[in-house]
Image (cartoon, rainbow, N blue to C red):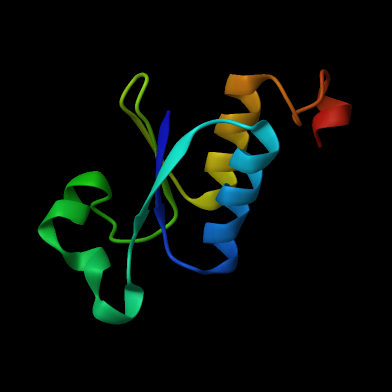
Amino acid sequence: MYTVFFSPTANGYKMLLMLEALAVSYDICHIHLAGDEQHLPAYLQVNPHAKISVLLDNDNQQVVVESAAVLLYLAEKHARFGGTSPVQRW
């Protein structure tokens, strides 16, 4: 199970699309950027850089930041959408 720290931006939606394509369970924790919630102490414990996108893999408590890194992490963990060779991957 995953927790997605989400704001409705292109980068936020990329993570949700990947999770839906993988058909895995996840919870969404909405981060309201206009309300400056990314700078609240509780969020800074998750991501000290105060940015979204963030994925928490609750299976191993792995925190992955930046949407591109999240997509790669999910593709590798679930062995889907990543190709089987460098040529296919890139």
